[in-house]
Image (cartoon, rainbow, N blue to C red; front, side, top):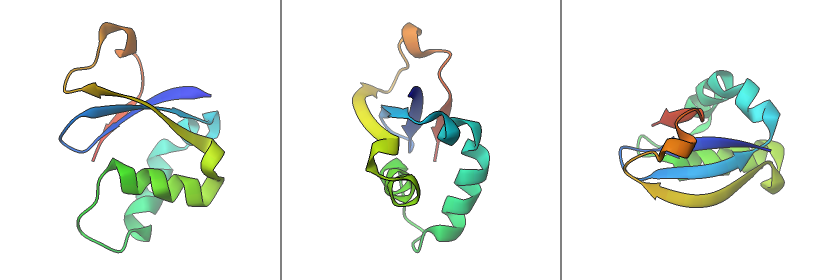
Length: 81
């Protein structure tokens, strides 16, 4: 499992994800934009999409980091919706 940061113009959330998610993140985000049925969405809907595609074990919420990325997570891949 690898770390991934997700946010939607708010608090930054730390998740653990399977490596295949990180390696295909850009393609998965494009697929998510086609999959979603609403114009209002956030990182939680993206998490739901990933869980439906890969299973609940593929992504796990770790903690809310707030508005600023701590130094220890500066090199973690981050996507803001």
